[in-house]
Length: 311
Ligand code: NDP
Ligand code: 8X3
Image (cartoon, rainbow, N blue to C red; front, side, top):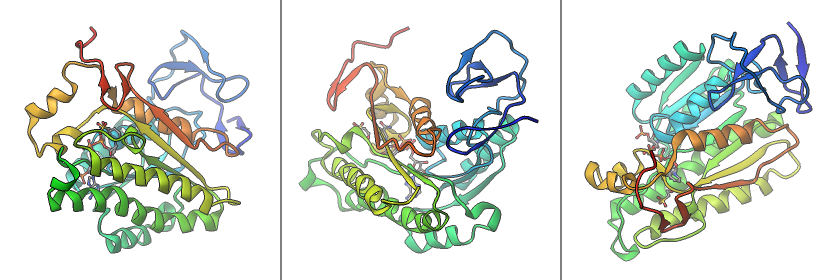
């Protein structure tokens, strides 16, 4: 097996003729720079795994992996050859995902039923990771939610608590449990899932937007806290993404949730996962601070083209 190193010092096996990119397209093994792709019609690869990825065997810890963006990130990192710690509260979903990743990409994964709002449980879970899982390379801080669409002063107390506890405190708990190990190893990457709601406020979204503004501040501050280390910090901030997000926001009202996406062409969870993976695949000396991304049909928080689905 040929062994090549990119300038990040990551090991890449260069023995396959073609591989699958994060978008699922078949590409030739790069001949020059690892990110200098050469499209080809030669289809000899059978595995869905990207055998050339600099994330091969890296450990990626994902919160909220049971649905939407977190689940799509799990698939993208699995395709890139990473080993995954899949966390969320719904254990049975994680189990199913873990089996799917095993059969599609031969991915080794660990599933942890974890509520990020429970600080002690988060620290216990991270502490419980055995040696072969403990050296986390990438943390994807994804778990989050909006609850309701009310004026700030009419927000139900349980909605207020749910959003603040999950989106802000939960993210801090997980970060605090994992980052010290990264500092010790002088290696690691935290990718926070922010939102356009962290930049613009919209009617009915005040509290949710406040939590995502907080995520933006935490992202910026964490990079400064880690100044002088090799640990990287990125924020991927999407606009409208079609997931279970609105179903959760409207308390399981599927008809109401559908109206958010039905007459427009939003981002898909895979689009966001693609951006997260891209951040993680940059050479080690490059830190992508933030990515703001929206569907073509969205131009600002409430500026959404609702003229219908494109065929
Ligand atoms: P989903 O509802 O599809 O996924 C949310 C995930 O968060 C689920 O896996 C859920 O798992 C997990 N989660 C929720 N609460 C907790 C908790 N207390 N502890 C652990 N996990 C939890 O929504 P998305 O995929 O869209 O959302 C993912 C992230 O993306 C969120 O941070 C959201 O704010 C952000 N985002 C979403 C956008 C969108 O339009 N969809 C746009 C911009 C940002 P479980 O219930 O099993 O615990
Ligand atoms: C989710 C984006 O605008 O639907 O973070 O609330 S929005």
